[in-house]
Length: 148
Length: 235
Image 1 (cartoon, chains in turn green, purple):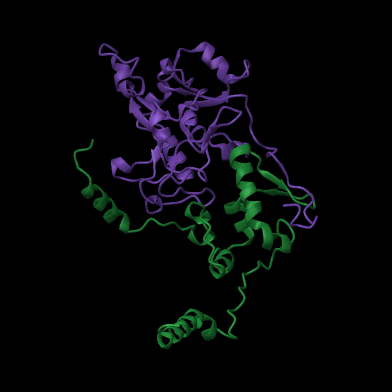
Image 2 (image 1 turned 90 degrees about the vertical axis):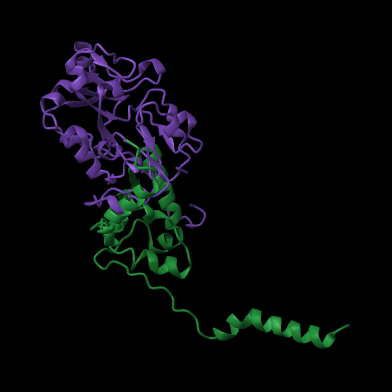
C-alpha cells in the first residue's frame, strides 16, 4: 500500500470521529419520557397500550371522518360513544400539551403540525399582543400604499 | 388498525351526531330590507368572525373574511345599472360563500381540500389545503381569503373550542358545519336579532325557506355563470 503511514491513521481518525457520539454517551441512556397522565380520568378512548402505539392513526381517521364524512361520534371497543375532537375532547382530559404531547414528541423528534391550527389548552388566552401594531405597519410599508 | 391492536380494538366504528340538523340541500335567504332598517348592524359578522377565530388584519391586502358587506353594484354587477333606484344604491348587502350547486372552487382544487358535501355545503379540509389559491381564482364571489401570514397575532379574543388557520391556507364560510352537527343554527342566523337571515332545506318543497322563496322576489349573485348559488337575497 502506498502512503500506508497516512492512510491507516486517517482511517483510524475517521472511525474515532464518527463514533465519538457513541463513546461520549456510552452507558448514559437519556431518561425515558414521562408524559403526565390525567389523575381524575381512568379511561382513555381505547386501552393505554393501544393509544400509545396508534393514537396518530386514530387521530388521522377521526379528522377524515369528522371533516369529510361529517361523522362526529366514535364508538370505542367498549361501545362508549366519544366526541371525535382533538381540541375539545382529547385535551379535555389531557389538559396540557407541554406536559403530555410534547414530552414524547420531543424525545423522538416528531413534529406533528396539529397545533399550527388547533389551540392547545395552554394558549386559550390568545396571542394578540402589542406586536400587532408594528406587524401591520411593517406589512403595509412593504407594499404600495395606493391599494384601495 | 386491527392487526397491530391484536384484536384489542374490534372494529373502527363511527356515527353521525344524533342531535345534528340535516338537509337535502342547505340554503340561506337574507332579507336585505331588514338589514337596511337596522344599519349599521354588523352583529352577524362579529359573531361569525369571533366564533371561527377569523383574524382582524387591518392591512386590506391580507384581510380574511367569511361574511362581509358590500354595495349593490359589487354584489350584483350584472343586475346593477346607472338608473337603479336610490334604495338599492344605498343598501349594503351581506356577502358570504354561496355554497354553490356547481362550485367552481371544488372543480379546480387539486387536492380535494375543498369539496361539496351531500347536503350541499361547500366545505374546506384545512389539513389538505396546499395554498395554491386556484379556488380563489375560480370563485366568482370573492368568498375566499388566503392567509398570507400567521393569523394568530390578529385574533384578540380567540374561541378556544374552534381551531385557527395557519399561514398558507385558504379559508371561507363553512355554513357552520360544526354547529349544525350540534343541532345549532349557523352563528350568523343565531346572532341576528332581527331575523334577517333564514336557513333551510332547499330540497324539501314544504320547507320554510321554499315558502319564502315562492312568496318574495329574490336575487342570487351572478346566476348567469351557472354556479347555482344557495344564498338568496330578498330585495
